[in-house]
Image (cartoon, rainbow, N blue to C red; front, top):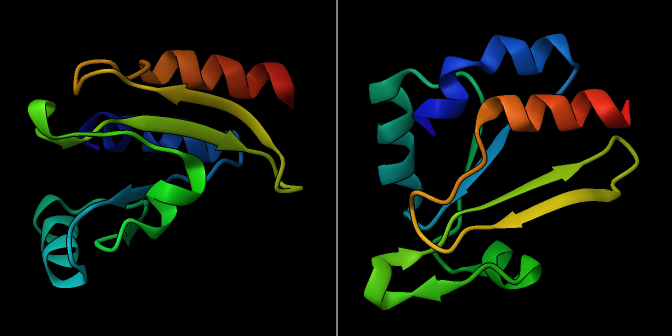
Length: 104
């Protein structure tokens, strides 16, 4: 999430909002947001409702929920999905920004 935070203004310049969804309960999620002063939106998903909806993987041998990044356009159409296989398997911000530029 800190990676997204670093380039948040770049996403805003492209009229793109970030919503991070995590497995924590609401109070823990809110504490993290405040502690790190994150400017984008966060959604706690401690019951795994969103995870199940989008088919995100959970791997207990790799510490739980695997990363996933999705790009949804203003019409609600899912334009890109990346399911990570480890916590290090996350597209760089520039890759996401380039993708946004290519579909707008």
